[in-house]
Amino acid sequence: MRQDRLRRGPKHRFVRIRALDELDDLPPPSPLPLFRFCAARGCKRRARSGGRHCVGCHAAAVRRWREDHRRELAVRRRDAAAVRGDDARARDSARAKLAMALRRGTLEQGRCRDCGDSEVIGLIEEPARWRDVVWMCREHRQAELERRRDAAAQRAADAKQAAWYDERTLALAAIELLPPAERARLYALAARGPAGTQLSPGAPLYVMNLVRSYKASLAG
Ligand SMILES: [Zn+2]
Ligand SMILES: [Zn+2]
Image 1 (tube, rainbow, N blue to C red):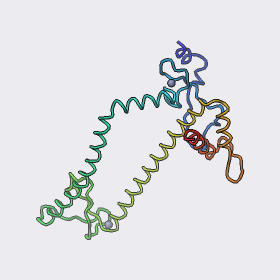
Image 2 (image 1 turned 30 degrees about the vertical axis):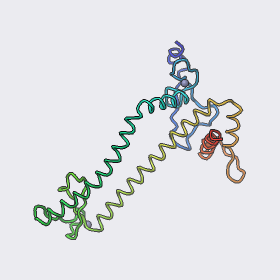
Image 3 (image 1 turned 30 degrees about the horizontal axis):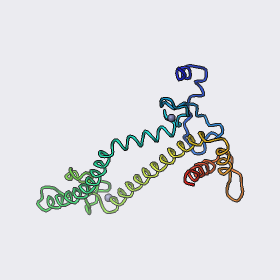
Image 4 (image 1 turned 90 degrees about the vertical axis):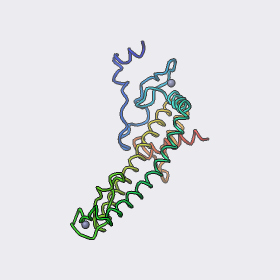
């Protein structure tokens, strides 16, 4: 009943949870626009930002799920390890097949994809399709590998950013559930900038301090 009223009523505007996209585009921490109740039966706490359940109920659900799927998770981990081993074997085998095909003359060495040079090295994209080898001169092969390394580094950085975003969202929601005195203590810690300066609640460093202080308070 109450949930219905919330969804339709004039408070609807405040029920919506604002996306915390940019580090420097954060709303000030007090008050945070988190006005949704946990969907778990009988739970009166506020839902996590962007989620349907409160921090406690969500964590409990994740624990239950992991416990129920312990065996499948272990199998999946083992399979992943085995696949990585197979990957390396497949690449070695593809290189050997390519060398053999060149010796037998069933496959001809091409020219550099990028500059047409005849001094080339083969770059095998997919071990199963080793005949689709891409021929490249040393220089262009190097450039290609560097481009791939950069792309992988970018993906890793994006993943790290996403992990921090999740951690921050969870921590800010959890802080909202704390008693006012404890919250005030964390806000005061968060405001401590370098060399005795005071940080404003909108500053990225303030939010980092806040999350760090909250985690420290959990550990202590
Ligand atoms: Zn709950
Ligand atoms: Zn080239």
